[in-house]
Image 1 (tube, rainbow, N blue to C red):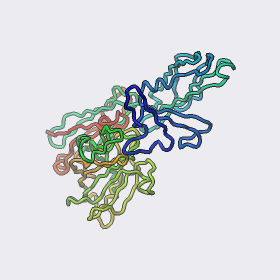
Image 2 (cartoon, rainbow, N blue to C red):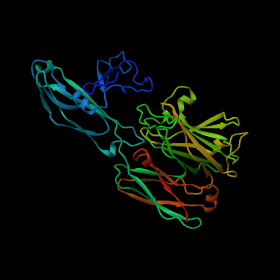
Image 3 (cartoon, one colour):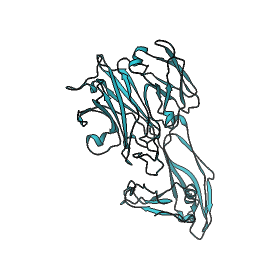
Image 4 (cartoon, rainbow, N blue to C red):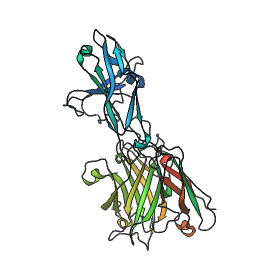
Length: 432
């Protein structure tokens, strides 16, 4: 039910499945709050009894969290933190003793302090949890029954990595990349790619714009940029990594699919497809929340042939950049065009899909890359501490190769920066 009267609030129960959607509306979207029961028979069961209220209304949340006394006499409680777990943290209470008047209510402010250094980063899911316990001051207060309110927090501190490069001019120029982390709370990495594709943000009114369930149009499949890097794997093989940056963050990357079509012999026909998709969904038919980096042969009729996977993608939760690694040998299967040291160049373009809400994006443009001799430096990687600067990465341009496989510039990926554009800095390179 929906609230249409400004003086009224709509509260809906959730008794079946919090993930169910109906007519494109998500859990709780048509009400001001949702009540959940935690009794053991429910899908969010617990031992004993409990419940929760979910809302995005700040005033309503504050009112719900009040300590109320429905009895006819005052109750006095001692207030303290209990059962702390997870990352190191501290709790500050506005009061350590509180009297709740009969038929009245009161509040205790709780401040949670978590040190950034141990709060976790894009590679580390670290939680903070505990209880705020209200213990009766005497056996007569609240019938001697204690009250407990849980708290739970999954923090993620951020870096502030930024890269600048010097001027590039002349034939085969080079310069130094200066990487800083001026205001970062934690260290951050700078991972260098050849920028190949940039596209503008989806217009939510376009057909197939894959709007998300709250109708803001901020789909996490809205690809912003794609880059690629190449690193020696062995004497005959290269490790290739495609970096796919989106405008908006996802909760879990596997709710999207990213397809990169690759032409390895320059005939204008795609020979392979690099697919970032849910590993479980592809291999067993049941999604498991892990983004795999698959490579499929693309047959002349446009269908997919045999596939392979050597790596999972690197795509942190609550992020907006997926790294899809593969080996060059996966782009060289028997009976098909082959990427190799003697035929090292390929052309790629992309398409993305929002699997949670529907819709897709055909990413504008295409790019070329030489897996054995890139037109611009790739594979540089440095970690910069908070407040520090690094100037050890050299950016070089191969002028002859740039005429054949030009890059738009440099793409620098930092998963611990703010999601969106800040996670993938795009530096245009225009050699004079």
